[in-house]
Image 1 (cartoon, helix red, strand yellow):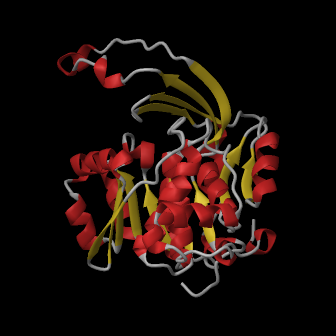
Image 2 (cartoon, one colour):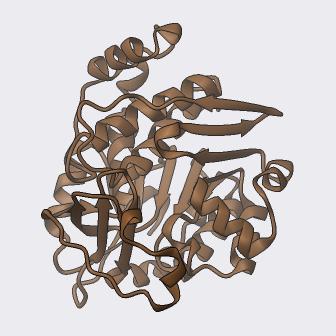
Length: 335
């Protein structure tokens, strides 16, 4: 594929494309997991709901970026059952020209088990995702401002991280759930290529265990480091400063799957707009809260006017920092 076939997107999203099977447990996992018995763990949870939705980290991030006025290029592979998914994300403005069709496999599947306190246990079957290493991003990424690489097949993550960084676009490295499987040398390679490293507090803990690098160590070697903290908000380390970002209250909190992906979309849109990190971080919080108020990570929708009104209402000290016009079209090239 050439850049002419997909245009020159401002942002590239290489990560899993999947159907999510979302299960909700009405209690808290931690009440039933005995820490002194984890070496012989055998436990079953009775879930009170099960739904199948479009998901995958790549699709989720791209969905929210499109709602925020971008036309992100989604990168990955879909299987024989992908047609409905492709039509849905294209309808909101996602560019799927770099999604490979693999008719002899099924689209990947995520198995998401969430409890009522926001904890989550997940599993992933890559399906067609493994074939995404057939997609070369060097040419298309050379016209982009940002490229985010998040959880998918490990070979694809390593390849696309290197290609985006080599192109001159800024690499956002987000190992996400694959931090469990990714060896230390791949994590270190990603850190060395990255302009931004993103992860939850738990994921950063695993990165530290594997590489020996703490968050403070990452801050010393990567320009931007983001740590998401669940209900406690998030923390952005950039330009020698630490920005504490509060969450936006959910009304109501329905299901946490996809909240972190929507957060990333809001943060990157804010950056593309050239907004200060405290504003971009709060955009991320508003983007995230829309996702967690629905069951399914691509079920939320809003207009630019609705997003701006909620932003101003939630963070009145930053009222008017984000405008409808900024969310009505892709950000300009001046970042």
